[in-house]
Image 1 (cartoon, helix red, strand yellow):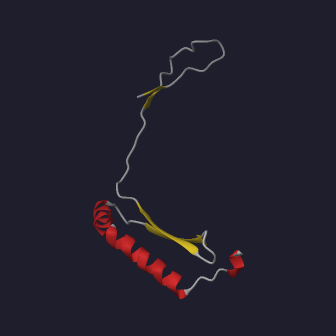
Image 2 (spheres, rainbow, N blue to C red; image 1 turned 180 degrees about the vertical axis):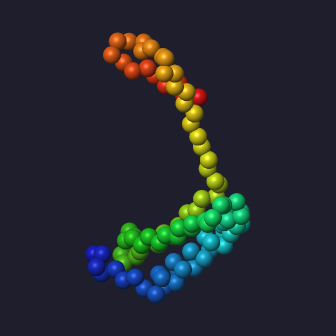
Image 3 (tube, helix red, strand yellow; image 1 turned 60 degrees about the horizontal axis):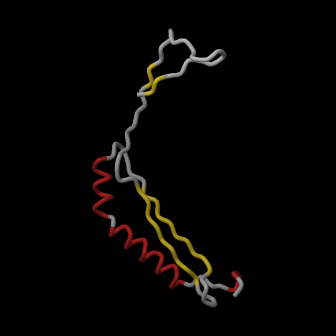
Length: 98
């Protein structure tokens, strides 16, 4: 069946809304913990994907949720020696990363 013949019904919309609610309820504790530990706000992304299925006239409905649970903090320390001589002619001295 051609894509223009597939009809997205109210049933599809209702099921998408129900699935998004289920995802939010399933992850409510983790969302709450992420909110408590965040500095300002937490962003939660909800997605709905509708695509043709293998069955004639059927559609696949895929819902998703995404949020950051843990605060990530990272650093790189580099020590540069301005007196370091290059090992080979024409090369710049290398930095030492710790």
